[in-house]
Image 1 (cartoon, one colour):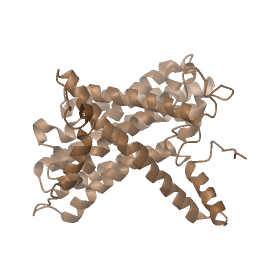
Image 2 (tube, rainbow, N blue to C red):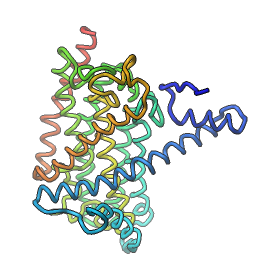
Image 3 (cartoon, rainbow, N blue to C red):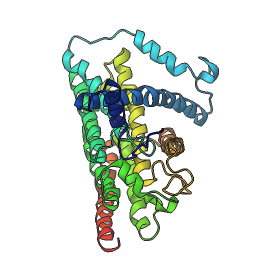
Image 4 (cartoon, one colour):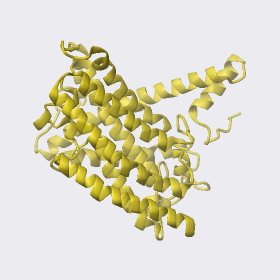
Length: 370
């Protein structure tokens, strides 16, 4: 007999129940901890790391096409193994900590950045019931992790005892703290409409055809949700330090910014999380505004022909996320880098007022027209 899976229950809870049934004991916190660890490890090994490595390869190929060259084409067919070869090379490089550095902080910083970038994936609903951890405060948890990454970057810049690294980390602090304001404010617009901070709950509110998705929501909602979506997208670019907001690691000005003094795998632990953060921000954007795992025809909604089919939701979730991810890659090789004063102006005098207006308008519409 097939068991009926409750889509509101996270995967970690299902694993905990299976373990308890296998051992013959009642579910206790140990089984839930093991289940959460299994799910987190699986997401990291099977989803995040391959997609991160693929993102590096994809950006190199896109950059080559935009610049009228081929990109990686030697290691493996079509250069597919180039990123893997670079990872092996980083593992074989000497890990250097120069004499003037604060060694404990220097070693700890990459781990904080790595963990904060990858931990956000555990609250993403990949398909109905496919959230590794269905937190009631999922969006709050995700935004908090973006701020945690900044702590690791500041530690890296300070402990390196390098003026360029310190300047890059200070730019990161100024930029992320600034853009977290519009990012968090417009994230509350879908929360107000859905009535929940759970990413799975927000996705389910958008169940149905494409005009049920928040960014395409029928009626007067489009006046609010379209600018909210654009503000969230631009603020996400700044939070991920992507061009034209890559001031913290501007190669032409700061060598490599906050990770100038890093080598070997510690450098890789700064490099790969950048793509992981881009991917997670793209995924959260698709959940908040583009219906998450729901398809445009509403076939995955209750009563639809694909309702409860996990792979159908997974395909649409990754399709939307990939489109947003590709747009971030293309923008890097299309737009010039902004000056720091232009970055601050865009945040405080353009995006922040728009975000506040969207929040007030959403609350007004929710109160009087819902």
